[in-house]
Image 1 (spheres, one colour):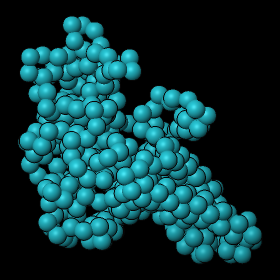
Image 2: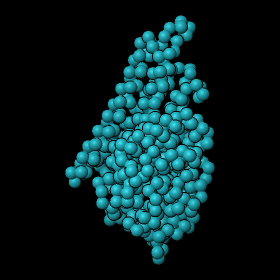
Image 3: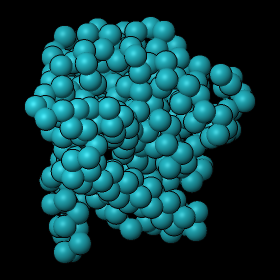
Image 4: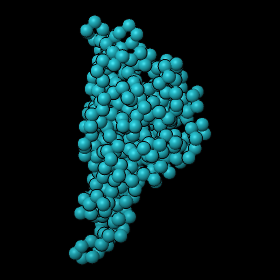
Length: 386
């Protein structure tokens, strides 16, 4: 695999395909462990996945949102948990763009350091003389078992009251702390994405320097098109359902081509229902893929031109990708039939469970459509990343 210094979009995508091929057979092991094994984490580092949003000024590849999504999609075809942790861990490059340069370099002295955690304000950040004292408990710490840094979203407090932004809302501040400063609780016992180890974590009265915290609303401190939009850290998530959907379609196609239907012993491939279901699943996956990448391309073109992308377009396409690919995998599961329920015979059960769980992420839920619809009708949705 390429070294960090040699990474390009092409070499990083090639590395992702190679890593996916290695983890495909280990997906059941990753699920049992409920975390990524150390050598898989090392593979994400050496492949450049955790570095893909790091700036060129630091020697990073600074991939576009489309390129990052393609990397995550490639990984997800091998194992959804590896892809999820790779995409989340790579947020290091995006979060560091909101810090002063010296503080960002202090927190991220290497390009391949992984960040985990929940950015939404579930905790409190009390102003002190030199920074903030943070306390709280957060959920969904994907990859926290191998993370180097952890983000903690907080409401900022001063003199016991929330600090208000000009629009009247409480100030939302995100602290970046060393992973060993948080207490992790073993809570991740879920339907799918078990290998992400997305456990709860907490801190109580942790002092954090002011320059190790940021507000999305203050804007980035780093130049570069990638860092102009805060929602770019969500853009790569579409790659998870797209990769899992394609893997499920490839498996089901091969399985059904060799299957004889009982009791008649006829080839499943000659069954019109099987043929139609395979075609529908392919259409669902490919339509969502085209939509996701087209909106990412449109947004990037707008940013390159110094304009703002169409708000909500990429968010809507991302939600559609999760929904459509989950529908496709469910259809394939039902079409393959009883064999789907045996976890040692087919991966379809894991594929479906992974997408059921992934689809509960806030960006994949149906309410994303509500927010975009509200936006289209002149409203001001509460979700900030549209």
